[in-house]
Length: 219
Image (cartoon, rainbow, N blue to C red; front, top):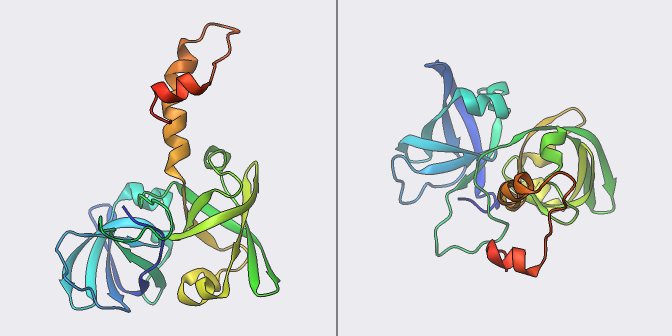
């Protein structure tokens, strides 16, 4: 698990095809203290397994499934990426719970400067857009952000200068692709409500009340 609080930048220094996927060699801009072979590191929000860890350098494989859902297949040597090491149980949860399992890609549709803030608007598939709620959490290229507004197939976020400076989000422009992970809570709620809906008879409504929520562990 991760928090969406970027630890630092990384640079792709090598890329090669391996068994239908891609292997990357990366250099972090910070020290990988107490490195553990096989530990998880989020690269632009995608949880990857790090190996051959040497100082600030490490390698990671990207599976065909990950390539199909993320923009990792579109980048190459010289690209700067956001890096976050896995969450320790004793760490502060500064962002929100992030699994590192990217749901889809989104496309920047507008970028507007309003005072000291930058407003980005994005389009994304409706299958993932349904999980996005106003003032809810979302992960963009590994960065935990709050949703300003949303609607069918689109959403917007406001980004502070510090975040633009220390992450790759500052380089985004119209038509840029980003990795999106929606808040996992909505997906769990949908999964738990599905059996209830299936059991309901034709024309019956699915009642959600305090008793139902308590039965399913929400309260």
